Image 1 (cartoon, rainbow, N blue to C red):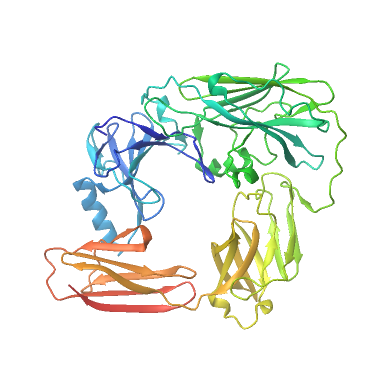
Image 2 (spheres, helix red, strand yellow; image 1 turned 120 degrees about the vertical axis):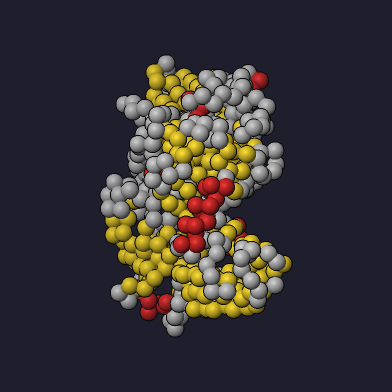
Length: 522
């Protein structure tokens, strides 16, 4: 962009449930700044959505073997916009994700391809920029490919904790201590000399980084941990496979994340398959008995700035007895059935061992229907799984209209999908915790927001299971409708379309409620 580049988000930054796959740049708290192609090539993919990357362009650079990505755009350049509109109208669609043939839309280095925006899942005006290996689709760190930012500020520690591995394989945070490494303070003895149980111990920590000229938090490039001068753990990211991004839940201590802490592990969970750690014999664990052992932790940012801290730790007490509970191991498939509910735990679902419960609760859910506890909400799962509930347990509720709900932080919200199969109600989710059901008894409705020629804006409000199909036409004609945040549609009426104007919106939701809305506008 033709403005000073100020970084607000770094490559591999810790986000909610994923690693950040690019760089975020400020756009002076406004939209509409020209976005230029970083190299010669052609537009190979166009995305247009109210979610995710919003309006996004992918430019392939054949001579470099790279593809650059520009996300959350407000608009495309005229030649790209014309093709996009024709594709949207051809399918009467509101979103788009299409691959283009080579050189259909060639671009030169420095050519304007669009304007910066705030579309999709963006929470403020900015440009999300990525570089990908065209062949493998792995996201690369753009700072390794010519984008230079001034940065002589070293990362700093905020908290350091000691973690004990239980005999079951579960990990347990025993001590956490705030650390102000920015002014040179280092803990000399972590744990204040208390009698901690002997066993295998490792480290969890919270740290941050900043680049020059930005108050926004960026993230680390490499982590290394030594015990008695022996390297026990190393974590370093140069590229990200998108299918591995959710393994962030194995790198962070998930239960602490729910409390607002971002504690990173310096040990590998059994089912962490991201491959960002160096394989070392002890996988980050050190046996600690009565003798003091020396721990050293080093963090490094993209510019090579490093911060190191070290301390002593000893464990002298007896190991505590463990409670008897059902433990699920990540490598072993399980089929569990209890109280009218059943589910299959597949080997890639969990990151490590976890306690597990499957039971019907005595209290009813928010809509007066039964509810069940599945697993432990303090543990993440890596992918979707399906559980089944005997339909006769839900009384007279209309099965087609049942909507699965999961309790999160005291509030129920919809699960990914609910359907009926073989006399059972099937629910797809990627959460654990308390589940219940509600009946989706309301059809979608349409609300006109603005009707002032030539701009027409309206919303399709669906408060249940979600939309199955949707058709929108003006005077029987499909136009390139823009679907924005909050399910808001808008269109500027073409000059060749003459009054009177009639809007027709038809569709059906996933509960089988069909609806039709017809109204004269302007």
